[in-house]
Image 1: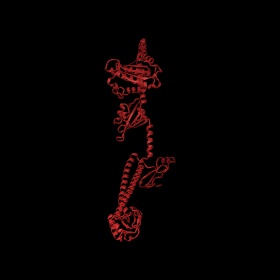
Image 2: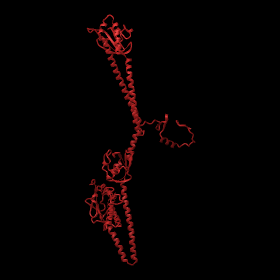
Image 3: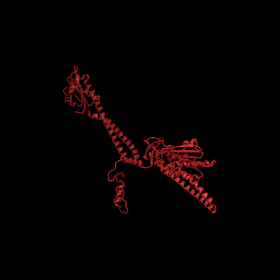
Length: 577
């Protein structure tokens, strides 16, 4: 039995080995991991190579390197600046000490006296102690010492350069003398006539200067370490937050995820719109643009500024989620669903095209109405047939013939009138079916005398289902209005239909004997949800207006005995003229 590192071994019954192809598939599906100390695992690819760090980890490393480089560079610059300033201060200090000795009133006199050491040695040592320099040396013009910190060096030659001082200048240098490397100056001693009668050198050892730098250097190192720690902690906290938001993914993974995200959003057939918490558009895929009829850039715009129908905007801005709500846009019927994103981050809208389904549903309603009308006619025909049979049995044959031919003549007259006036088969069938439905409900459906549409007049791009949607909904609403008004007012409910070609346009006009439409409601008639029925959905007239607009037509509302609705559809589009 093979024991995996980091896990206790336990016995298990021998298992039958998996088929090679299944084992290979499993190996491909699960990323390999390598055990590391403290129970952590390092993800590996199929070849056993370590996967790249997450984006947060990469940024953290970059930030740490940048912070360390900035802190180190600043520390070095600060150290160099401090060292330079310290050396300058040391040069000024030793220059002041040397000039104080050289310019003292008795120095030139002692230098030309019989025993310069006796006078200058105590004075030089006193100046050295008072000024804090490491040495003050007085010498003749040959460089032989008259005074020195170490009395044993008196009488020996000075270690350093004195040519500049012999020329009457004060010179400075770093030179290794008897006390080690030091920063020193050499200045001349001038008599009353300006002649160089001796030289004075004063200096501070490099070790003393380093000792002066040690305190600031330690403070500088502490500040640099604190800055590095603070910068590293800030970078760690920022990158921990970034890692949480990026779910530990690397730059390549985020790039691939973005590509998959974009490809998915723009390939689905459903319309998807993402809104932020201020209801501004964050993303709108191609399907949503097509369904909503949007043009140009919409990202960043408020949703209520897109020019969409008011009912759709209200449903989207409503804090309550919408579930399978049917709405109308300029040319389509869409099903809307909304859902919040997270806790107050925004919302996502999904839109499905319901236009074709709504048209098919309307056609299905018409077919169902035709079936009901045929059933009613069959029932009525059976009753009439029973009446004819009874008359024959009673021996009243002429009465039976008259009764049968009168009914056939009435039905045939209506059929002949519709077929003769309307040569378009879809419209003719629709009018016959609606006439039967209206008769079944006690409503007279009348086709005006000037109605005429020859076969072949309608253009191919005017879909028959659009005609069914327009004329079918107008007649249904008119029949309902006529029946409702007849219930409260005496009279026979009547619906008048006009279908003809007028000035290059198809004119469909439906008038009813109902109560009409109030003037205050004329602007709301074609809005989705507007209805006068108790259990209506308010979709019929909205679909009529939408279908008319989609085909380049217009809808008008008027009043005669009742409501008069007129639809005009162009027989030729502007592009075909």
